[in-house]
Length: 456
Image 1 (cartoon, rainbow, N blue to C red):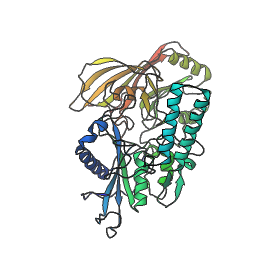
Image 2 (image 1 turned 30 degrees about the horizontal axis):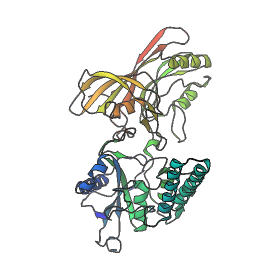
Image 3 (image 1 turned 120 degrees about the vertical axis):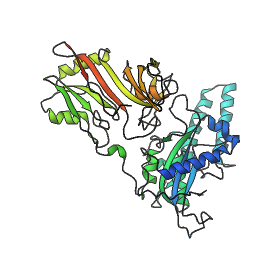
Image 4 (image 1 turned 60 degrees about the vertical axis):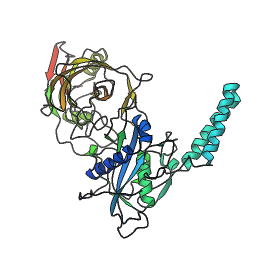
């Protein structure tokens, strides 16, 4: 399972922070090897074409110890696929599952078949007793399954999956993603993990935003509790999102009632769980006399640009009312990956809701999503990127990012979008213009704050 890497590239000093990273060059090389291998298996082409996540883990081992590799490889990589491939959990090129629920004669398969028989009986003769039995046995089977997953970390400590979720039932499929499979295999083979990356192959799902060949962070709902344990004992990179912000928040306008600021990318609007600076905290510090909630609207942490804040309760409620009734005009500028015709304009109308298995990602969902509308115009383009002006008519979380990246939108993710495109120095999305009615004077007031970085 350990495949050689022919490269003089140095190994990283710290292991990948899996929830936000730029893939190490060694991982990129390993991913290309996996893609080449997959291309030689045409029997999988249709399944992969529908979309699947793969992962690579670059490892180091003692070249004198051939017991695991049989080849004396000093540095190589392990590969994994998420879930199953060709309806199987194991293939020789890839690492095995943490627990093989599809092993012949397994209790899981037997009980799953018994529950399927109950379903068939319900189809013939529905009854509350049969439904109750199905529910009881399904819950019991799920608990039994998760109790079979015992995960290692770099210290050699093993933990049962259920204990890592602290009383919460894990989402379906937990433990079968690439990251935990790769780390478990490395620890079992006594290999030292160096860096890791996951990448998507095939078409994007209808709801999520995935682009073939792009690298993606490990998911939150399924993998974060597992990796919190499995990474113990490794020297892991710090979370890039917690690094010091290079730019400062600046005051664009102020009077007795309002403050208009230019928020830098990487700053929260309001305090979150992580120790990151926020607009709310800085305004409270600079304006100690201010009262009320202050924040009348928000920008994503990764988005920069204009925000208006209220310094008293009356102003806050006035601004809230203006935002609620769409009386505030906002224009954003965005640099996207992709060539679009200059002058092209249109309207994107796609419903959005949170991806509960991978927060803070959002998804397009026609059943549960809330309507989201964005108007756009292409103002400049070169051989690889385009500059757009955007006018959101609704204020859904990540609305502009999802509308631009989703195949049913423009299919061109914003440059530097770590969630829906490629990670970069920063997200190239900026709230450039803001117009509203001054809560005290009743006059129309407008601001424009261009971003020098958003230029072709």
